[in-house]
Image 1 (cartoon, rainbow, N blue to C red):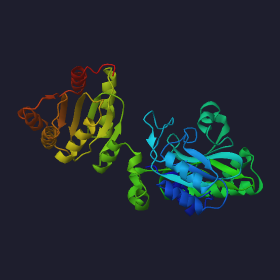
Image 2: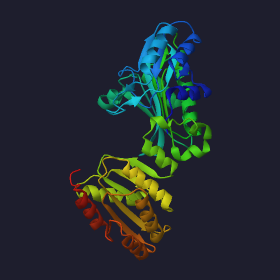
Image 3: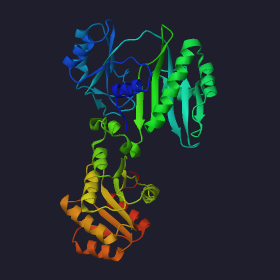
Length: 390
């Protein structure tokens, strides 16, 4: 789960990370009023969307007065920002952050993420922070310093000193860096983060470090431990299908193919998608309905698949262990009738009560194509959808 920049800065402040602060606004009037309450001087109006590259897309603008803040806010709110991370559809701007401008001497990057290869959290830092950090990572990866953190001992002082030396920091700025990095690591662990980024972390003209922008992401599976974080979720920033899937407790990821997949079990789902690609077609999604899907859950899964305009047919691949195939077949039949399914539907049922499930499908009088063999099931849905190469 991602949160907005203004929410991330509030959370960072609670962990003692200095930042520019500011106020969130949902209307032009609120933005102008927020500017009135900030220190005199130049102000920055920042669009709040869950994507980077806002500055280059016109989503970060300077203002010299509260009146100008109101004018900028009126132009930004309701507009659509298109950045490399949003895709061509862009994201609608529904809220803004109004914050004081900062006199910047240098910009740095500081981040924490999970390294799946080592099983450790990695602290990354670069003296080339700012809008070009992705280009640095791509073309000059040696400019990004890394420290792997052993979860048993935590972030060590020598690792911080190596980073400050590599960044060319000394004196108060070096001490600030160490304090901020320690606070970020504590936040990362205590709040079950999957990503923490300060970009840029700036050195001010006065020689102090300040978080000027922040990105935080959290492990969805750990949100039950953090209801305060779950309350920060903004459904408007997420794919509506993923929001519905979350409400139904379905594991769903949209892809770009034309064959909708409904499978129980992540491993079986991945194998099904691999077989579809081996036949020259492309899956439209990853969808794991879990081990106890009833009619309501299956109907919701069908709605998700049909909500994708690229889907030309659906493949259901179920291995009944805890889930009985006859119960699932009843759910499929009921769901197909509810949503008035008109697309090709191929169903493979194996496991507990698979024969009874096959009879239920056959007796339904619905246009359902049963298959026992997974490879044949994939070949059938590809043929029925003309899906080769899609």
